[in-house]
Length: 149
Image 1 (tube, rainbow, N blue to C red):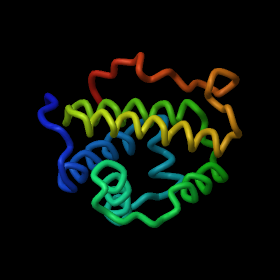
Image 2 (tube, one colour; image 1 turned 180 degrees about the vertical axis):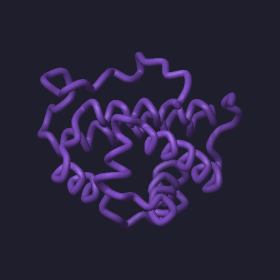
Image 3 (cartoon, rainbow, N blue to C red; image 1 turned 30 degrees about the vertical axis):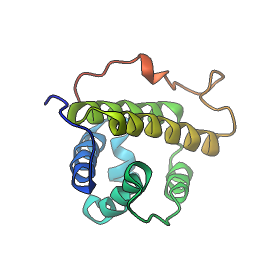
């Protein structure tokens, strides 16, 4: 599917996030964190994720949850590495690019990368994945991911 228009409303975010999490759940590297470790019920969790992105991109929703806590719990159960966050960003960018183009789509991709780096740093220690021994975080702007399996 070719990117058509920019992200404009909650419905766009719902479609985007469903497509993204479909790919993420199926991914051999990060999928087990959703399916085995967290046992994520997407239908229950999705409204909160949409709220998060609606607040971040459209400034029209309330989001008062602690986005770090679930990631810290996952990390405690099975450590998350730079490679996991890198794959998340690859899938996020590919999904956004597959559905949308425009300033909000670009902001969504940049915000996703910033969030991934912030979570990685907070979980693994300052500087993790930023050129030291971060375990595989790739400068994602250099990647071209044309399809999501």
